[in-house]
View 1 (cartoon, rainbow, N blue to C red):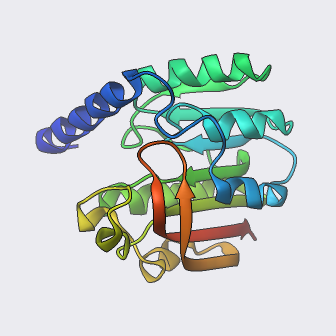
View 2 (cartoon, rainbow, N blue to C red; view 1 turned 135 degrees about the vertical axis):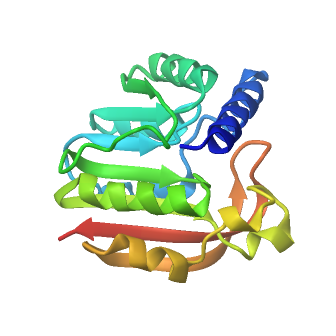
Length: 209
């Protein structure tokens, strides 16, 4: 990683620490609605939640019986994730790591969840290819992120167009998965104070062949 890239990553981690240090849960305590709707697709077994933040999805999936590992660059967010797990009488493993450095173990996961994780294109490509490799045969990827149309809505997500990928951008990165559901949608998102209103997202459910 170049010095410039490392500086940008450190700045991003600091921003997330500041956001998660504010009172309450930035995106609420309830799971992302797409994750809730598609959770039955996840087979029994360990689930990896990438860029998990304050733990709302990880806690929900742990409550459904999965052994969950939550990865995030914000130590503050992960501390709140553990607190939420305790509140909900569940447990999870937390890993404090930037996705630029985190290696997804190949063939290890029954499910990988990647929700509102907006990365620079080269890193996004590497992480998603790693997620495909990380799934067991029959394992499932649940992915949702804002697409380019979100810029015009302004109801959440990054302002940098480079961080917003279309379904066409993402399909080539997911070779090895059967995309049982893959759509660009606009839906009402009311998940904390930073995601509030109509959101233009890309939603994907992919099963490892």
